[in-house]
Each structure stands twice: as structure tokens, then as C-alpha cells.
Length: 214
Image (tube, rainbow, N blue to C red; front, side, top):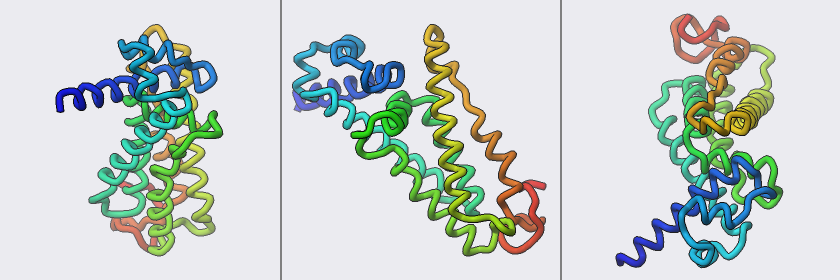
């Protein structure tokens, strides 16, 4: 049992180290030697768990997508409207991208590595689709708003925020990931009044289009 626990700890260390390297260097620029050095294990130990860089990158994608999926599901369990659900999704995605290197790596691999499986977007897009569909069924989309356009907007905002965070991380590599920030929640609050049909009573349904909390 102790051997199995050590093996699992080594595997986790390698995935986390790979996450950092993949964010900084992308798939093409990441080497197994740098990952093993960052993890503090031998290259032999690395190849025992992951025989190739592709296998290691796939493990990063699976880990990042899994963490994101669980966090998104938890964040939307008790929301009282599709708009508060979308707000919760964007907030948790921002938090994960800011704080979790493996999540950032999974997101970057989805953009840059054609073999990335699972794609990071698959961990949260279904929830966004469900929330937007619910908003449409409730009649809480602003007049003339296309549900598919809302989904595309959320994806574009999230993908753009992730790309900007990676760029800032590379520019500020001396100070580390803690200095990376994202304006995604603020941007969402600015665009929401154009999308949501919310009555002044505060619940979704037919009414005047106003920003939540107005």
C-alpha cells in the first residue's frame, strides 16, 4: 500500500510540474527533462508513469478538465436563476485559471495542441448550454438575443481571458502566477444588461431589461 501511495504521489507531482511547464512553454516547447527536474524525480520515474510527452499532456488535459467539471457543477448546484448560474461559471473558471496551473495548461493545450483530449471546453460548455437554454425557456433573454450567440460570447470571453492570463504569466515570469489577474467577471457584468431580460422584482421572466441588482 505504501508503495502504491508513493507511486500516486509521484504521478500527481509529475502532472502538476507538467502543468507549469506546459503553461510556460506550450506543448512543443516542453521537455520531459524539464518536467522531471521541476517535479524532483528521475526521468526514469517519469517515463514509468508516462512513456511519452503526449501521454503526460493527455493526463494534464484529463486532470484539468476533471477539476474544472467538478468545480463548475459544485458552483451551480444552488443558483436561483440561469444568469446567476452563468455568473457562477465565469467566476469559478476565472478562479481556476488564476490559481491552478494544470487547469491553465489544459486550456492552453486545447487551443494549441490538436491532439488534446479531452478538450478543456468540454468540462464547462455543457453547463453553459444548459443555463442559456433555461434562460431562453424562461423568456429571460433580451429581445432579439440569439441563445447560440450568448454561448459563443461566453466561450470567446473565457478563451480570451485564458490567453491573456497566459501572456501575462509569460511577461511576468519572474514574479510567478500569483500576479496573474483577469477582468472576466467585470467584463461579464458589463455585457449582461444587453443580454438579460430581468424584471425589477429580481426573478427571471418577462419584464424590463435591467442589470441584476438594479
